[in-house]
Image 1 (spheres, rainbow, N blue to C red):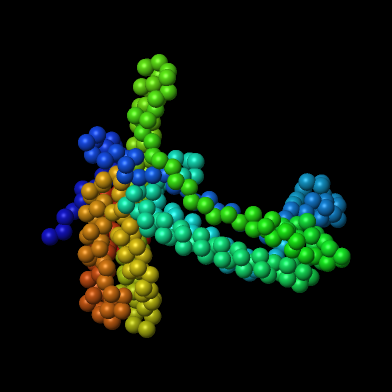
Image 2 (cartoon, helix red, strand yellow):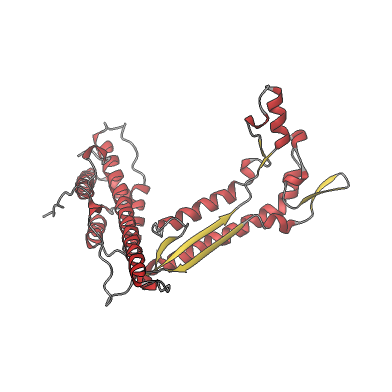
Length: 331
């Protein structure tokens, strides 16, 4: 028999309790982590060109900005894609925390995160090396910029005997960095500045409230991640089952694999200890993780899975306080 979650005005109205002293403190369970990646954009603002264009059109000098694309986008695409994957994986394996660029990385997810970032960093550095190797040829074997081409716009390039050369490759390399930064978590008890007791206790309360707010934000994000993939499945299954034969939309493997990724990482990220979230993730795993090939073959499995996904999405929406019309599933 399916347990029905009690609808609330909002799932996140409750307070997540401070971790008891006898249990592992937050500082022992997690750390703050940031992934800092920089890459040469391949764009350069040209003041002279901007002023010339403004003059042609009878506009003020500061009316517009002409940004040159120094290389075709495809020449930097490999690096751009690696950076995107790294940032997505970092966000997937961490939770929001403050506004300083750092996110919470639970200790349980540290090894997964470390392996992923090391892999992305290796890809990044290899791609940068390949770019450096062919950079001189990419710059010199182009006519796209015409008279807008300037040697100084390209890191490491210099004019030598009427020819552009990559004289300082290290200058180009310095434009690309990939770094993972880890800092310890902090708590109210870590505040030991020598000020008056009244002020110290007030600041410690503020720190505790800030931690509680961050934990709630992290829990909210985990629920939303799970709900997003479940409601997506409910909607896709409903559309497929309602369509006529020959016009049914394709059921992609990613509909299942996206759920697998979420339910696998969720227990490691649940540092707030939300038992209801863990229970819901287990139910999703037991009810919705089916073989995509078998799902496409069996009408019975499609019907059962669609009903299960819609039921779970409906109950999650009620628990989270999401209006039914915004659930993304046909109930």
